[in-house]
Image: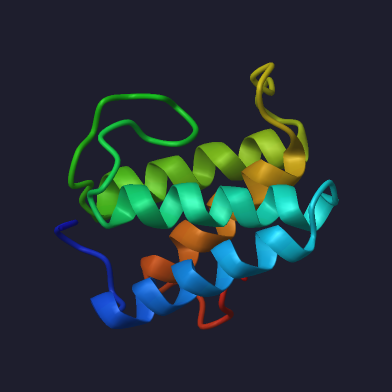
Length: 112
């Protein structure tokens, strides 16, 4: 499990399940790409993925600093400040940024 997210695990699991369910309904849309970013971010925040979704660093069980850095990096990609990796688009980056800001307690607006 991640060390420092501000939401209960059950809440993260619920958001993850919702996002996964919605992706299937929205195939090929920009919002589906955003939800894929949400899923990637929450899976990483929960410690289920060892590699961070944007910087691609090996960071299992990310603490709040790692999550904040990843959210900022994703936000910079979304806004065009940072170069976008070839396999990513701004909607996916937006999903990552919004999910990590939510898991960290910076916002109460759910990412999905």
